Length: 115
Image (cartoon, rainbow, N blue to C red; front, side):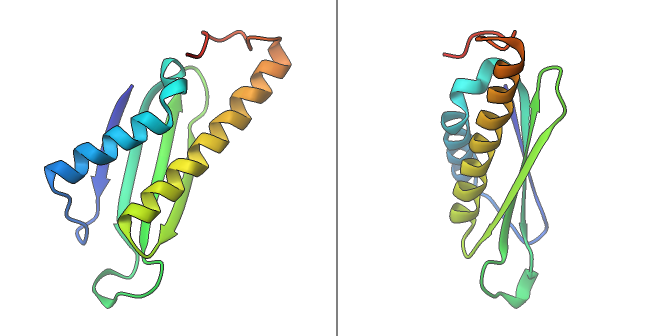
C-alpha cells in the first residue's frame, strides 16, 4: 500500500512529521493493507492566515482493490487531531464496507484474508 500526502500552501510538513503521519496511518489501517492499493491524504488550513477554531482539515481517500474509493474528512484545531480523527473515521468506514462485503459473499467476503 502506498501513502501519498498532499498539503495546501498554508501547511508545511517537515520530513519527520510526514514520516510519523505515514507510520500512524499505516498502523491504523494495517489490517486492511492487503485490500488497499493506496491512501491519499490531503491536508489543508481551511481559514488560511485568519486562524480560528477547527481550521485544520484532513481528507483521507482509501483506494481498495477493485472497489470504489472511500473518502472521509475531519476538521480540528490542530493538524494532529485532524489526522487522528480522519484516520479513525477511515477505519470505521473500511470496517463497515468490508463487513458488508463479507456478509454478502460469505464468511471471507471473497477477499484475501486480513491479518
